[in-house]
Image (cartoon, rainbow, N blue to C red; front, side):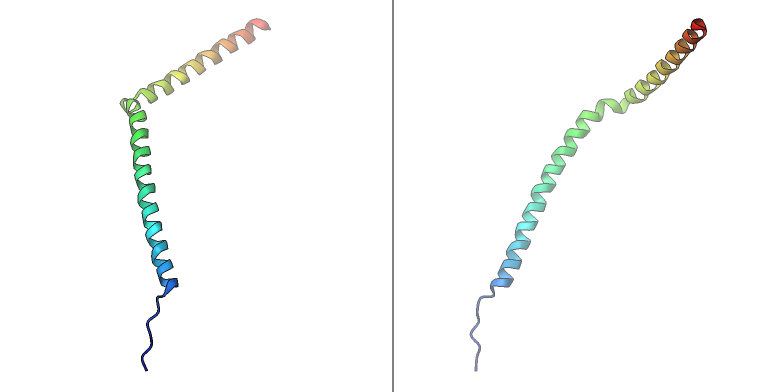
Length: 77
């Protein structure tokens, strides 16, 4: 006796779901690539040390403010 070959719907569903997942992964990867490129373009001006200089200026301003506050406390007494 020969068995008649039937179409295996469960295997077709698994294959179809794998194809859809692969397509979604490619689509997500393309979007990720464009987001990374945009972020790199936004942060490129900071690569020359601008951020470090701003941080040092902030520290200097904080120290100056603390000195001024100490002077005001001494005068207020």
